[in-house]
Length: 212
Image 1 (cartoon, one colour):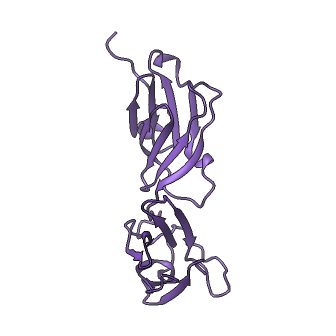
Image 2: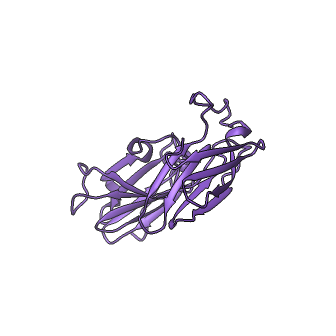
Image 3: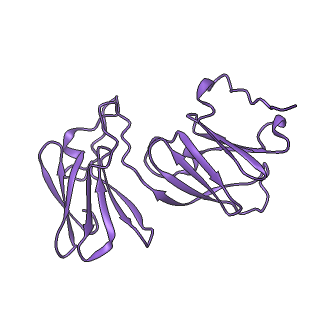
């Protein structure tokens, strides 16, 4: 038999196989159901030996968690999403089985995905800290200010959708944020202590190093 056929789950349909990855021992599939399935490469027909949903592992506000790409070695599982994030998952057991549990080690890449159709998902603002060129900040339509680092692998995400009373400004029923929380540009003060963010509605807000 030259080919083995994996059939889509009818509840998921055509979106079940948006990514495939083959390693020495395993086949990994992922898709828009946010589910990752791991098969024994020598016995695919019995079905996945392990499966889990990426969004159940993540303890942060919602991004686009459709699984677009995956890669596995003997130490970690890398998952890339349609929202532009790359997550590193730890593998604590030498051999994957139905009892294997994965955990998020770190976010290797954070994007500025916005679920709304009118929103733009690219990074709009970017600037480095003048006192430490390893540190940079980005912003976008997703109402976040991202504090990252090139070498130290620091990735902190702060919300910009807070009003003057620190109450959360929520998106509408279509996932669209108001223009006053959509970051468009960033400038860091010469001393590196303050971050100035320009928003789509023309307003400016100044955040300190603790992003308040």
